[in-house]
Image (cartoon, rainbow, N blue to C red; front, top):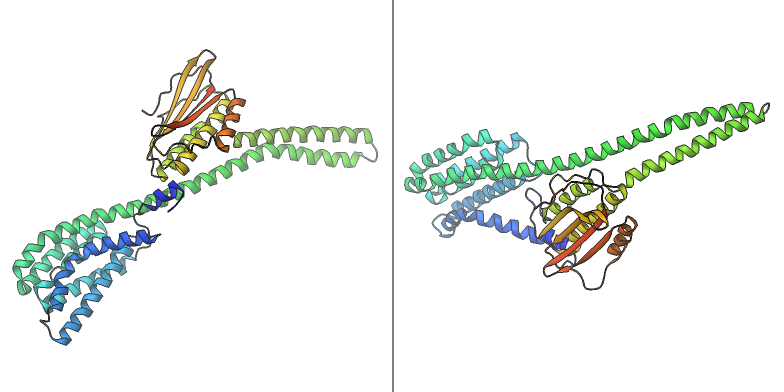
Length: 396
């Protein structure tokens, strides 16, 4: 059993449109497949009953095996991340249709259930417009075959063939949309990282381009002046030192700005982290941080990050509520962050290193930290000094 609640919870999820990762996922997807193979009971029973010659039974088993293999490969490959080309899909669907017709005509009405799988394959693997045409055609083909194999049995199955085919179009669209959303999210993350790198490159160029050019120019002047005018060369070197010191200050300020945690960014990251961990997130809606001191914002952002990290990694919670409230106290206005979950609560071993470091960080910003287990879950409250902010509400 996993000691990490996040891993345990993630292990309980079966990802749509992805190959199985564990034996449990293999078992779940296999059971799902077996349930759908219920309509093969009649063909199998027909072959086992002994009503066919040895050659006919061998041909029947061979045809049924090929039909099932093609169906499984087509549907579950097509509904995954790596689908077949349209031409290959058309060939496989056509193969299923031909096998269903031939086997029904050769062995009788017990094999009409194969058309259910043809309809499922059309709905799951074909484009919507084509599926909307081929599913009714599959039902018509079954009725025509039923005129010889078993008309009443075909009439009993026609509604099921149509309904299950159209239902599978929805399932197929859901799987494809889920895969596209995952790919889009990965693309957005990559674009955001590229944009951040470009912004860093632009800022560094703006900060250092002029200073380094000036340092280079003055270094060349000092080198030329040094033999004949050492006093002027010394002045150039002094200018170089001043410019380089200012450049160093600018770089440090820029790096501090990049490293400083921002509350808005942390809130956005919180939603992503909780959603990825299958935790229902209740977050503030459009909070306003205008006028909040930088030190207070940074400390509160670190508090939010630490609290959410604990929720995701250790609590095993199913719901997490984050509130941001502006309160007026005797010491002046404060901004209060509250993070509450319904997980396992504290370990009872005292505050960990994360909470200890967070307390020190908040104290440096003039804030306070309260954290402790509830009857069901855990609650962390961080308060920092705030400017004259309006009420920003909560995600209630």
